[in-house]
Image (cartoon, rainbow, N blue to C red; front, side, top):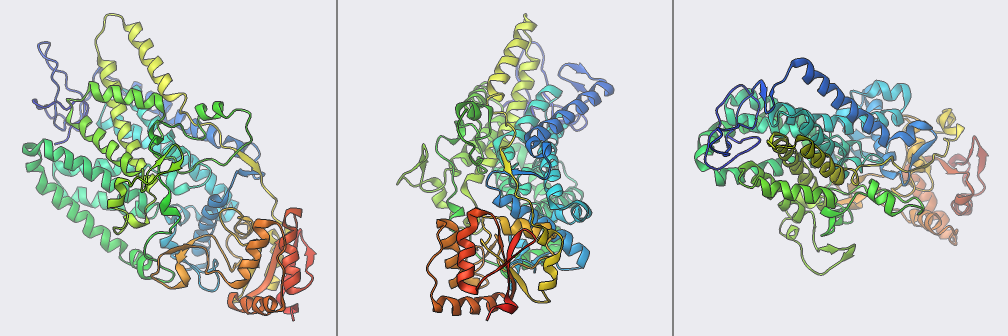
Length: 623
């Protein structure tokens, strides 16, 4: 079976009770084991009392929670009055949380979002609707709003991901709580997680990844039905958090198993049968549980086939591995004094020079370990694939094709953001770092103080520059009282919608925030989501609703700040578009920067009415 700390080529560790630990051999040899050992109550430093272990656990978990709170502290300090720079994805995530709460309170199908993109709706399973969180946390959303639920999920997602890695490492891979704690820091606070703190609840919640890997490896020990059912439960829940993360975890764990099998055919041979049986139980159970949700995702209303063209171009620079995250200590210092800019949310595999050098040294030092070789090769493979196609060097596109070209047109890969393959690189780095630290801690030297100073210095040089800083925020525009008071409801009947201009997208999410303030009760004609191109089920993905001719006028006014010339033909078409959207009410923000939008609406539909902090046009009064 697969080993933990030191998997050398020619020895076998004895089995004890369930933890993967370093098995120290006699003084005559430094060879270490290569099998999956089981739990031992004795750590590398000797027996550890239960009280000491519990205190270390509590301190570790507390530090992760404080670290997560530190990252979002600018939002918490002025709660409700701040939002991240470029908050489009956050607005979308809040809407999905609001929709889940509405689906619970109104008894609606959570997979079909009927209040968005009216009258067609949105396929929630084909979007990042995070129903795994939105449904159980619906009481919080209904009581306090989706903003509170979002912030809670960000904090718990970061801290929980770090804690999950800490648990896996401390219970099944290393005996040093310090090594496990450091591994948890990289697992939960690296850019692949922390860079999403402003935007994506689904991508900071990677806490099931170490558990998924653990349960796969447990299958090698037998009991395929029990282990298969446990893994199936994790798989089903992860589907409703983020399917992409599940797909990447399956690829990463699968490659580690293949690499191990190639190098240890004799030991893997006996484990193939229980592994295959367990995975069969997992697949069968998962497919039964997910049959309807997956059918709805791929064949239900507003389903699509293949990724959105722009999103699938997101890839990592060839030098991305040694780069620091845009919100890291190193980058903040480098950009000190510059105006705030949006954080890079797709910074997967960004480890920074310090950590890359430390990991490289640890891999070389432990190269005789089969597990270390498997993890290192896996990390490198996924890092190279994350370069996408074509390659990008120092921020510039090249004509050089990347290895991802071999995969980009395959099913599932064609919807993948190549840069996210770098998540696997980060996951591989966590146990490599923890195992290396364990071995360094166990190393017997004459000068213990010098060793401790060396460890502290090396870790500080690797981790401090890469540490995430608090997210950057701007003032949140208050919700107009016309929306927050529910006054809009008297204008909107059954099967009707509200048109809010500027139309919502990643850059201009005002309409989404207004809809969020109603807990998704307001039916809006547009939205920021993934749906089929041309509105035809099964076409490739497209962001937003099918554009109508009037949308082009709104877009011109929004992006140029100048009202386009409006003809009589435009007015006729605009009325036809209102019928297409089932629009009974048109709303526009009152801020001066939206003057061109309001002018365009006036040119199309006549004078509007200012009330409750916004401008409105009642379509019943439009001739």
